Length: 262
Image (cartoon, rainbow, N blue to C red):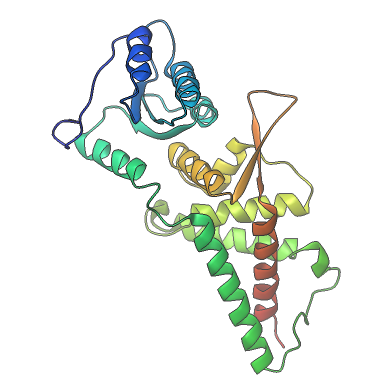
């Protein structure tokens, strides 16, 4: 399959062969089966990644598995796995996975896009509020302190609307897992709650492997910060990066103001 897609490849039938190949320094992307003789794919990915770092280079890892459980997926995040291949692997699936991996550096940062969108929309809503003669920041509901961020009740309404929208056509046509995840994390922040990676994936409404790829991307683009759980080494928490949170809070407050009757 790799040859037919124009990729040069070399195979390894054991951990020792894989280590020898990586030490040769010619490999950029590693596709690893989760089930391997003598060790599992995640342990091997971690070992190969450490070797590459010691050599001053980086590797991209793809994990192939027929049983993409949440436990495996979270372990894959810790092992810096970039993407998943679910068995049986098709040629088209392999092509799309490799295209995503090799296009990561050329893609526009999600962080840059999100910051630009939030800033532009907030500025536009403030401009419209001035045109309508509504003082900026007016119309706050009782008990809502803008200094503490957006209104939790309003954000919950947005999240409910997003969930209902996703249910149309079983989520195949509508729904934005990134937006749902950010809203859920914003609510958790305002309520001083922690959110694990697995909980954030569930909140996104996307399939597990898709949600975990999204988490990897958002963390890589510094939209989310991943914090280890010191009480449980198997678990990580997610929080919105401080500057993104401030922008999102301003956007949500402006959106709430725009929807309230003048």
